[in-house]
Image (cartoon, rainbow, N blue to C red; front, side, top):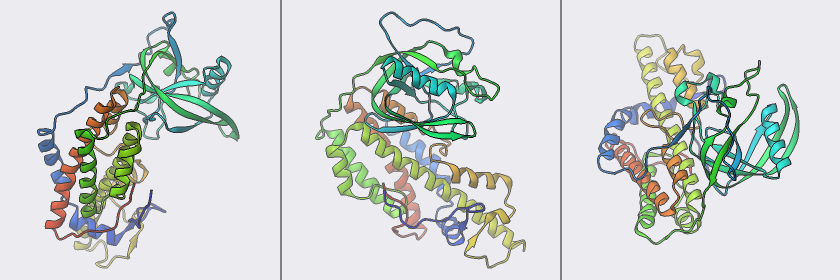
Length: 385
């Protein structure tokens, strides 16, 4: 990934560029107001090609049960991310229950765990006892990780830390959680004391799909249209048509989904940064009008010294810390990616990617038109995937 010079955001070390504030306030501040309208109009035109997301509820009151005879049972390690087949995944473990899980799969020779998506706390930790009851669930399809290496990397204040290196070898459907109460049984430190186990069905992961069919051709064209529109809006984008052509000619649908996920995370963070920057710029101008701030501000502002309203400060801190997956208030970022992971046919995965790309083209086209009307030009700013 190549990243060009971006705007600066900091509290202490987080600094907003005043030039960036002024540009965003003048050029992008009003775009957010058109976002919901554009999305509603698009949703009426493009039908969703994936079924509702299926979840497995975790009930701490349910007793442990035995697995069906002859079934496959795997340890469950919920995370708030999707791990795509074919990817390499490194997990850090420090808690005894996690280390016991790895010891068990090494002793059994299985070396496999299932990692389903779940919600997490704002700090990224999955602690169901501290989470809203609505989030006591895991996605019904998880990634199957094969342990390639478990390495002791020394002690921390919380205990011995291990790095577990995995290969995502496929997917599985969770038929039932055998001991859901394990997700809620914690010690005095608030950490789980045992790991969950699940009866699973391993899924076929064939990758072949027709790269010349209509949807794949349309996806190539749509990604290129989006790239050109994003150049006009100076937003994150795929770096070139050659990259798009290479990926759609050679990559699996899993890698295409990963590429789209990375792009969308950057886009969501970029847009929320612009919205917050516009709000801060408006606030600064209001303060200048009443004489609370000087009419000429320094090029860079440490906004921790500005006495920003708490809600505005919280928004700035949130976008700075965010990975881009928790900033869209209109729908859950992960829904289309969970649908892709749960879809067996590669052609249907392409259709979901196409629908998502068309949705994004519509939104970006609106932003580009507004930018042009307001006098904004093309720019090399932004970052590339």
